[in-house]
Amino acid sequence: MLSIPLLLSALTGCNLRDPSYALTPYKSCDALESAIKGQAEEEIRWAYAWGNGGSWSMGGGGFGATNDMALESAQMDGADAGGGDDRSYSETNTQVEDVDEADLIETDGTWIYVLAGDSLVITQAWPAEDIEQVARLDVEGSSQGMFLRDDGKLIVLSQLGWQEPDPLSGSQPEHLTSNGPIVKSTTIDVSDPTDPAVEREVYTQGTMYDARLVEDQLYLVSYSTLGVNQDTWYESKADALDAVEISTLADWMPDRFDNLRSGDAWLSAEEQVSDCTKVLGSARESGNYMVNVESLNVVDPDAEFVGTSVLGSLDAIYANGRSLYIVGSESADGPWQSFDSTIESIVHRFDIVADSGEVEYVSSGTVPGWVLNQFAMDEWDSHLRIATTAVDPDGGTTSAGVYVLEEDGDDLEVVGQVDELAEGEQIFAVRFEQDVGYVVTFEQIDPLFTFDLSDHEDPRAVGELEITGFSNYIHPMDSGHILAVGMEADTDGWTQNLQVSQFDVSDLENPVLDSRLQLDSYGSEAQYEHHAFNWFAPVETLLLPSGYGDESEMFLIHAAPGDELALKGSIDQDEVLYSAGSDNDYCTNFRRSVVIEEVAYGISNAGITVTDLDGEKLSYVAFDNVEHCANEYYYW
Image (tube, rainbow, N blue to C red):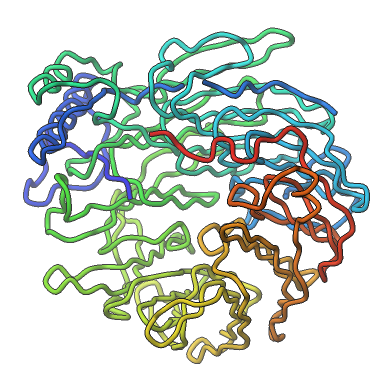
């Protein structure tokens, strides 16, 4: 959970007993500079008070030894790159229809694009028996995800740590050279997948949080520190405070370096992510980061980034075609505690303006507790539903709640709520679907709560099912059935095997466990990363990766609404690992999967294993010239 500063000294006219959480622009660049420096000084005083003084640096930070993105030749949205041919194939598992999410793989039914270790690997995946690697690019930094568009453009997002940027232009960004994190966005033309070409490289100071692609507009959310981090050693608190005092606003604002190919030449430009007039803050104090939302039209090759920044906390984002929500929290712990000594989530809504790419602030609200992840939020009928785990400040007891917020001017007001559910437990999974909701909590057993949300002002918890174990991710199958993945546990709450559950929720007041399948596994990435969960309804098959230590396999599970869950088979990658000369370890565990027609593709950093839907092997390809464990760690 990130804490981020909302500075009392920057804004006026607020009730100091409980300052407003509404965002407003700073009155001037001087006011913004004063606010940022005041926050940094507060952090220094806090750190030295606890004996943690010493190593400090200022600003959004720079970046640092790069993996040159040199070209080598040899989604799940169907790219117009000679692929598809009306074949059916699985798509990226996203939360909101028509809002794409960055993932480690993409396909168009003929080609599969994989971010593996230090590389982008392109394979010809169809015909399945003849799979082969056709191209590879070095990825600069640690891969975070990518988007494949139907115009043959691939957008790769990566994270640089303690390394210098190394753009193909050879032009070194002037302000992006000191130690610190940087996000890189690379646009690649893959209209000919055997000969990909980099068209644009954009470096932004900060750490990537998430990204969305809505029609032609990319929205990249990152954060950068406004406090002090490791770079320069100061002997005393006074020295650190003096360094802040002599700093300027430019020392703190994150920069962007844009490197655009024009014919055979490169055009380079450097600017701040957001102009000081585009930085918003409130009168509250809640941490030391700047949240940056960058928007780019990916169709126009000459389009410029549009940036908006917020001094506020960041725990999760939610986006649809209308809104972008940024949600953060104030904690009772630390120097920027909540004004009522509890934990509460602050919600900010922004309008997504498709034509201009602008992200325009609209309103703010607050609810008790903290959110689990993006699935804890959903907008339906212009109302936000949000599920949180809250703590009673008197007894320290946790409970779950669902809140419905409606916009009234610049306020997001709670108009309906169901709270104090599952006392002593925390939320483990949430899913909202139009006028219904599902929440899983856990302490020793797993209650599945069902919600009738058809009346915004009178949301109701209408059903509850108690079973052992818990679910981490819930996936809708049809209007009456949901899938879930999690762990079995005994009645004392001790976890056991990985399990998949199917629930019949056609009668919302009486949810029923239809089927449960336990698997010989300690866990799956799909429990906390929904892009690893691949249920392909046309072939009634769920592909679920499992990896622990030196063991990894891809489970193939029959899953259809109302049917008994059944393990059909699994995929191993013995041939891939042997050909790659690699052992099975955390770097080569299965991460993702694809289904094309009735063929399954199990994908790892080492390569792709191809089977039928019962696990009978058809072919494989071991990736060539890929460093499997490259860039697996951040360095800040």
